[in-house]
Image: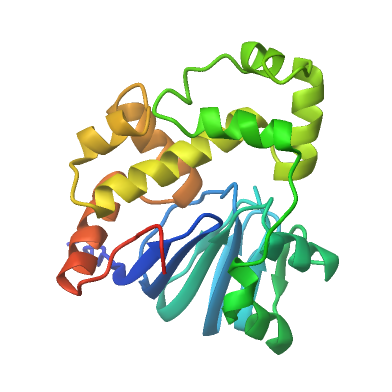
Length: 242
């Protein structure tokens, strides 16, 4: 008789701020994926599988760059930070040589990441790009024509693409998918159904939401829904404030 695969569950709690998605708890099953955000995992021992770097073991903490393909192996307890590439925290990491790849973190960087100042300091962004991002974070963000939106700021679409790539570390089309996914996670954490969350976040249908979630987080929306219920039972959930 073939052995039955034992599912490794996620169990923990988290919150959401403007620039960070935070989770603490056990790391369970996840498929190969790549975040548009920078990922930091802090734990005594972390194993990460990557087609580019193989299976690596990192002690105390690990940095995973934006768009670096990977899969987390099960960890009993960890702190996980998904950091916006345009944030102050990301710029500080980049200044210290942490801009891409999968790398061991040192103790001083771990202390910085855990400090309140890391997620509170302002980061500069071209105000014209900020105006565009405000429109793209709405419920119709995935449907808006970026070229037409660029004209309202006096920029050409090519100029917007260059500014976005420099400020966000990714294209606007990728960024708005990531932004919509974060919105959907927020709605799920507030008790909305997966169908409602997908609709409110602007996804065209449930399949679009599911595919984006799997690609960018390595998890199914159903797993996130279960995790959200567990968080609610502990009176914690993803939120917009600490």
